[in-house]
Image (cartoon, rainbow, N blue to C red):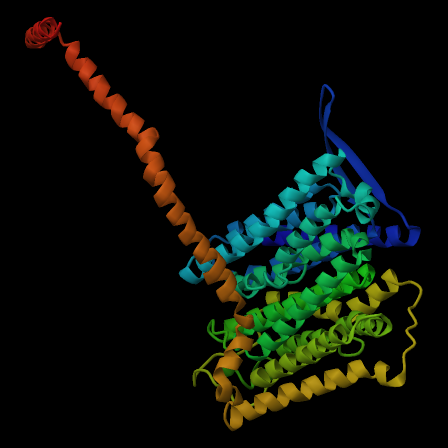
Length: 573
């Protein structure tokens, strides 16, 4: 089943990419309405929107999915129920496809909820306590966004159609219609894990690594960004864009700082995803929706490769994910680490790799824009932090001696995993330049002063040096973070956000729910409501049954009772 899925998705991806190129060149767009049921005056219509954006994004999702499924053939080879896993992944991809091509809020909800439900099934796939907790946190966090989405659908009923494409201009000028925009923003922020809904994203690392590669590159977490790209016209409203710019900027910095204090390999990569999502959201809030989409595509390529390489490393480390136990792996797994380091450099924005074309352009457009100093600082500081944690990760895993078992079998993983990783490597190197030529056929000329032009490069170099020096000091002398443990814990634990969201909101809502059940459902309402009525009916029916038994004793007693009553009445009168 793996090979059939891989080949069919790969071919379909190439076909969609060719169509996407044609749609860009011809400036073409298809809006298809399929009438499913027509009953009297009521029509149920399925609407599909095919433009260059949806086609190219679908081709990228299918390309990454096909390589992830091929990779899973070997990675999940110990799983006896691998077909069940592949079926779940395919259902996940279909949900994403439905979300991408729908201009209708109802059909988007089908894909949106499909992603939420299947992501829960994939996160709890290994079926242990940690997975169950992570799955519950993921599911409940995403339900907040789902509720917002349902409310926006309800509000759209006022306007006669759920095809939001027709109402975007109207939304911009209508205060009442802005409610839909706010609800869509809330839904997108929960799905793309922006502050204050960030804690579920690192927790979702309990899923198998191929799922992480798919979820964190092109599917679940990018669904919110993609939805806001479709609603990009709303960001011409100042307070709307300013709010998103602030929250996404803080998300970038929070995740960048957290990754510098994290020792779990997969969580470091997850926090880097969170940082890049913040970058996409903030770019979108400034009105550069094409740039946000461009970064969405390039990020998908190198992030999938990073997770694939992390999976190979975890296999070799006997399922250990702690980077402190690694070391000298570049000598023992040269091919895997070549891919890993290329993906890491693409993430940092190394010139002429995939990430450079989008990140450098975004930062230069920030320099050109009217943003305040605080937002400007958040952008460049978070870029420095990205390079810092990437070099820290390289330092811990590549240099020095091997810190795990004294006898450990280390080698590059089998050919199936390597083939998919090498394919992703080619895309991570050439994908950025290829997409920049396609999306921006007229080259963007950004004219900046010399110091601003070199600021991005300077920030990256400083971040890399900081990452190396901090790791070096903490490894060979003593860990500086331990001098101020509470502050380090605060930064490394995502500013205590898991406590607020998990143990706070979820735990207290459960406690309040229990109190409500005890006092209402199992309390006074039971005594005066259905339960008491039930007991009264039982008692009266038992009495009725006794009376209907035609017992002579009962009739004699009742006869004596009535004679006494008559006698008393007569005496009284």
